[in-house]
Image (tube, rainbow, N blue to C red; front, top):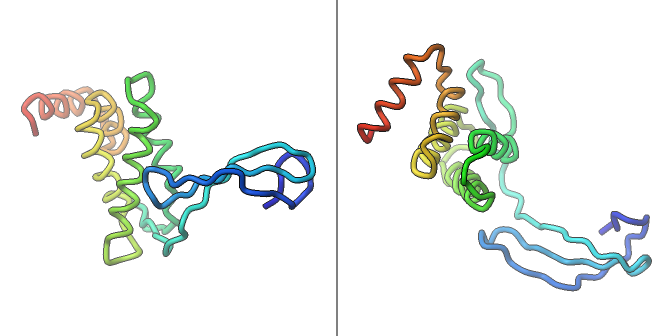
Length: 151
């Protein structure tokens, strides 16, 4: 492992912990040359998931892209990063449990919508307005009415 502070590749692991998801290992390392410490995360590499976009193009699943979308929807809401990470981890796990390595982007959007609906109604409406391409106030009204009626 290359030290981020100096060019040395001589490091030692000072501490190792499994994260809550159990699929990520956190390692605290120390550079043997400069003595500075840094953290690395190790994740099991699984088969690649291809996302089929609305226009038919395919791209690799990017958990950070999903996370950014959720963060944007939850901006200035009382939603913790732990909640957001939990949603992203859950969605990625659901995708990996499917019997295919190609999924439509709409499926990912539906997974996000369902989780945000339970977590925060305002974040849900924000995400839905982009995901479902609301074009006018009526679209917002309909979505809010559906929330009120428990649908």
